Amino acid sequence: MKWRVVLFALLAFLLIIQFGMCQKTEPDPKTKAEKKPNGKSKSGKGSGKILASKPKVKTGPETPTEAQTYLTQVVNKGRFQKVGNTLTVQAGDTLELRCKGNPVQWAVPAYLEEDDEGRLRTVQHERYGTLILANTTAADTGEFTCYPMYCEDKDCRKQYDKGVKVFIFFSDPLELFVPSADYYEIIQLRTNWPTVLPCQVTSPLAKVTLHREFPPMEVKVDGREISFDIKKGFTIHRPKQYHAGSLYCVASLGNLRQSSTKYMLIYVNYPAAPPSPAIQASSDTIVVGKNLQVTCTVIGEKGVVVDFTWEYPGQKIERPMHTDDSVQIVQVDGQNRQRTQTILLVDEVREDDHGTYTCTAQNLQGSRSASTTVKVQSARTTTKPKKP
Image 1: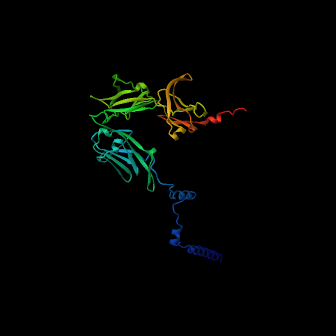
Image 2: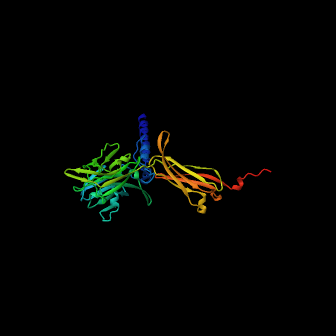
Image 3: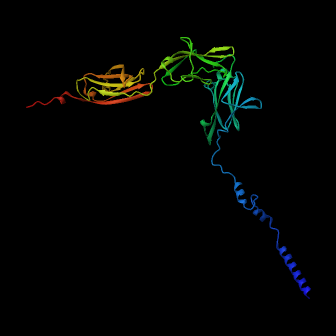
């Protein structure tokens, strides 16, 4: 009897398990697709990976960076070389440069900007710009620059701080200096103003010296008072009177030796600042018929030319101007200074001479003005009444 009860209970248990398994059905494919996550995930890591898979949001238009902009030279078909600060190309060869970026703009030596022979052309491609210069000559020597452009819609501007520059020498075995149409070139030497003698060579291997024509001698180049740059020429850093004269450069390379254009250096004592005039009238109040003098004075550096102009009330009635001008060396605080002075002479003052007198002093740096007012009284107003 007992074994029947046990057998019955076992059968019932098996039926219950079978019934439960039958209740589990395959989920609908559409529902399964809807619940499928965007990416694989594991417990504790799923949220991080899902965030990483989100597309990046652009915060603004992409602009070329300094690292993205660089120059390469096309040396042969399919061969390129990165360009440094300088480059030497044999005169007569074709120069082809590539600049990464879109768009880019090129700057070339002034001589080539006026080129009307069609030797120079630039092309913008999808990812880079190309500069091609055919039939090159020694005169093409100079600085070439590629500027990446920043564009907003159709408005584009150069990114000067990201420009890439290269100085290119177009070497010519018969021309050591960049050719010039001038036999003499006049250069003004200004006080404390660096002056460049642009004797530009066509080869970085050339040895260059500086010479004076009269008396014939080589000029010492010490790197401080006068220095030399192969890409620029000689620089006189603080010009003095003794630097003036006729100078020229001599270049030598191998057995070839050539002289440059002659530079006529004219020294000008260039002022450090505009003049500061001081004005004073012989009298602030003057009686009709008396003579008036208005003095305008400038104290400054020796050798500096100062020009004066006047504005005065008598101009309204076309009263002619008479001045007395002078230049003297005077002692100021123990130093020799130049006093430049002009005196406006107004003879037999009239009532029309009443008003403001303005003196303007000008030198190579600019101009400044000073003014004073003069009152004119009639003779009757100055006569004392008689005592009774």
